[in-house]
Image 1: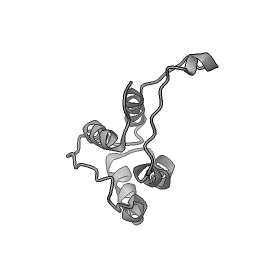
Image 2: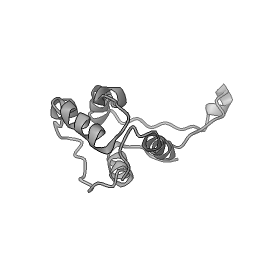
Image 3: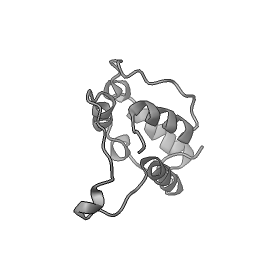
Image 4: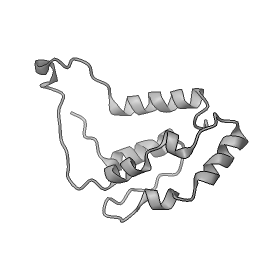
Length: 114
């Protein structure tokens, strides 16, 4: 069984996006909605400069949902072991799925390539 946590996700995403890893402090008061509130213009400049598809930041990112996930106070542990008993036979690895969708969004010129 693989354990999924924000800390592991944070490190994984730093590798996917080729940015320096900064450990995520789960006790922090970090508010990504507040930090990104006035960054829409920066995103527009990136889209223009790199010739990405014309998108608004809110169309490709749900910062409010991310904020909830980053500050979720309960540990959630689950297993796919009993899923087939209830008719769920498919399984997608979270980390592989993230890579797949990041690559697709890069191919579609929605997010920048490295």
